[in-house]
Length: 153
Image (cartoon, rainbow, N blue to C red; front, side, top):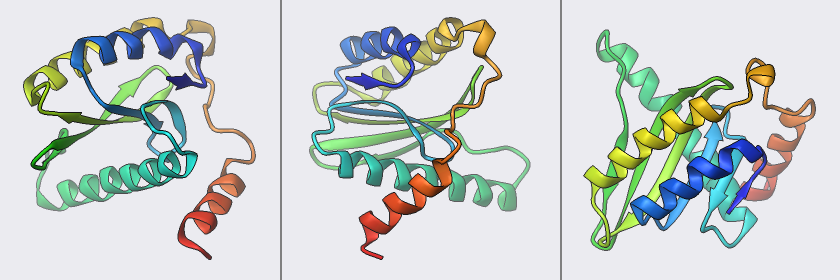
């Protein structure tokens, strides 16, 4: 597991132990990775973060067109694994969780332990830095470079 914010490690470790998730990615709504577990290549992490943030953003806009209440988590279930994608609020702003899980667990357990992790993250966030932006000054440049590398442009 890797986390750029040390206070994220405890809640994420607990989530991983309880849920039996295979892959987890916590990111800002802009797609900046906060923590990840299970990915073996950085290119996979960048692709998953960009795609996950894009899916949440487009789903949010679709929800605005269809009615007054926003959509919650998104779940895609396959034969051997499933993806749970959910936005949530922390003292550091709006974040997104992407969880890949298999037959060894269930959607209900993923949701239960994910919600518990979100509560733990809110309680663990350092108060003195709660309003500090997570994005680096050169984030936009780094994002554009990553997207060019990812999509070959």
